[in-house]
Length: 338
View 1 (tube, one colour):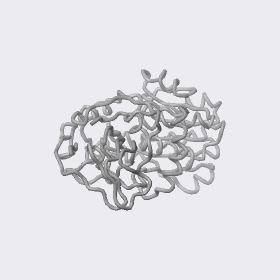
View 2 (cartoon, rainbow, N blue to C red):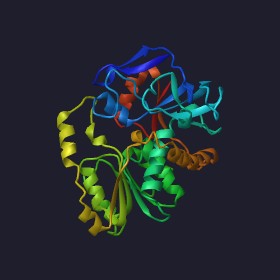
View 3 (cartoon, one colour):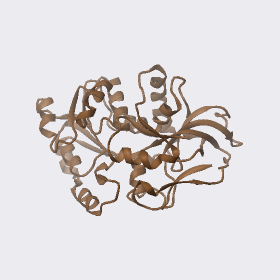
View 4 (cartoon, rainbow, N blue to C red):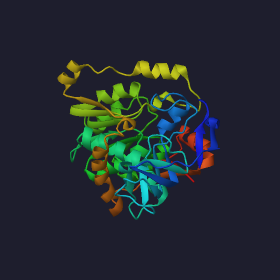
């Protein structure tokens, strides 16, 4: 099989295609002939050596794939060769063949292409866990979604729309019309240093009920400031760690320094909640992930949710896919194809 390997930490050029033995499924595993692979911001962090959960280089990353089951283990009961599936891969997804536990793969809704299907597992599960489970979004509440043009952002906008929320998104100006077309009612310039004033104006100084923040650093402090009473902040990333193709220790240090400390008495007195979300550490919660996916899948089948593909690259051009994300050129999910 072919794999894209992070040969060492550094710029996109460190990604190299190598041959490896075909994987063999264990008793409860399925093997997938991969047709499309999701590219996530965590992959960029791993390539730069800034993602502590990733294997040490040289390594193969990748959290989600779509393709055809071509082999199953002896104990598999719900999947069979020939099934079109999308799956969560706890690393190793940048490959044209992967083995995953049976519980980690889901049948692809018939209306989705392989590329669209590979856009689903990480992005939609992150968005639905953040909005529906942690933040417990209720109809009519106001949601601020940072990075609303990205993979998770586009999924979150659509899921918030299903709950009839008032949606405020942030994105660069060239992406505003796209974000509105997904369901956002207001779109702010993500390059604006202080979004607090604009949010207070939109909400008549009340603030928002929920903020989804994948940025980290100073953004988390400001996101917390604009929570309304009983407001909830969900932090699920730190994209501010990376602005270019190379690691900056200064950028890392300043971002971590700017992270706020949330004190219990302050949370109590302001009637606010703060949640952290790392999907990479929920892989063993298969029952809960399946419950969330069972909400997502019917909406994908009916068209209530539509994965947004922001760019596709052949597997051997993984470096170009990473550059595309570094440059924030995507509206929606970036993927590799085999």
